[in-house]
Image 1 (cartoon, one colour):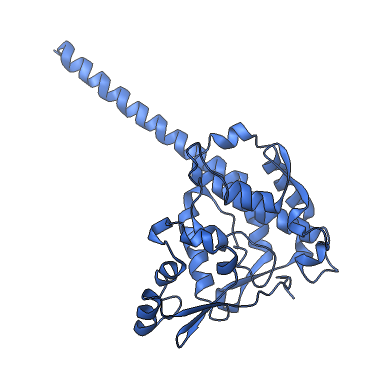
Image 2: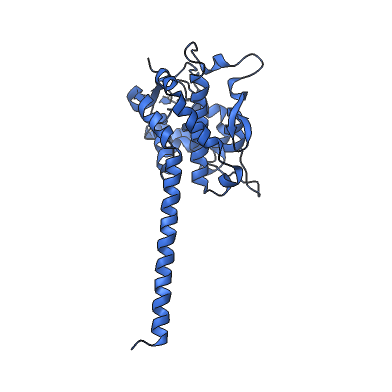
Length: 284
């Protein structure tokens, strides 16, 4: 015969198990919904983006993307209906994956709606206005530009205490400006559950590209990305308060010798920034 205490204990255990199961189901559903939101973009990338340059870069089949524009438009419309309140309710990794995918997808949209006939994304700007300042991105209830998306919603986003919402400097290896000099447009969509892995892989594949980042003697030659966004690499994320500290974390990818690592540590290695290739990252 069960005592009331044992019965109560058993009921409590059952309730706890049920609550944990419900929580795991909700978490799984949220992950599935996040993945499904970007599934059509993932398919477009799988079909039309190919790895080149020993895997360090990618080329985009913009001609094929143009033929599949209706699919791209459906995806962009899916992003556009997300409200600010819905976005604010998401975890940070889901938000950041959403914003990176949005930036990349609308950049592709900008290219394919003007393709062929352009050799660079810069062809779409003018003396008075850059292509990144065009307001054609319908996102979170506003008409935005790519600059607004990158510099305000991603890089410049701060919380109520003035702290960066997304302090991760690896975003610079994920957003793609449709140019050869830019880090690769990833062949798959970014998702909350894989974001950490994806950002790290993008960082490694770019830094290991000896055509854009290399050391020779006492000089480290790197992409101009590190000049334009140096401040982002010196904000203390993952204990990197200087650009040199960031580079030292990827000594193997940069093929730095022990002497070069020591020189970089002691501030005795020059850092120079290479010219940027703005030619379109199109598959030929």
